[in-house]
Amino acid sequence: MSSDEQPLEPPKLDFSNTYYLGSHNVPTDTISNVVLRRDNYDDWKNSMKMSLKSRRKFGFVDGSIKKPTDKFDLDNWEVVHCTLVQWIRNTIDPSLLDIISYVEDASVLWSELEAQFSVVDGSRIHDLKTQLHDCRQLKGMDVTTYYGKLESIWDSLVVLEPPFSCKCGICY
Image (cartoon, rainbow, N blue to C red; front, side, top):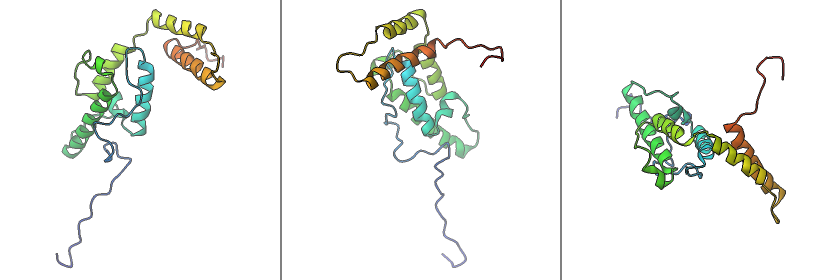
């Protein structure tokens, strides 16, 4: 190397870049401790949403991060995208993997899971109201645990049956 030539510096890592995946972000990771089963879609969705948002990756599943046309960005996008699909599949109960088709698009997979498991029907709402009615603080159960159980039921019910709110603009 001559004295006039500058050594090439490695590119700096930009942790805020949407396409950034650290060495600890591998497709075999399970990014949520909540496993999707037939009856816990809302809990699973919230857990996955938080996990993906904390990694700046939720835009891939909600469709706001579009597939780029630039070759360099496209390669990076595909790496992240494939990792996301695998992360989602890793949090689904193995018995359910057979009933969802293998989809290579994260936003399509996210939408298919929502269509299949977020079915709001009267029986689910009735079941939650029954759980709320039957919820008791059992002997030996501390108040915090009891309240957490109640709050979980309330939260699920509010998602499925939002409380009435006035839309007149005068009320608060």
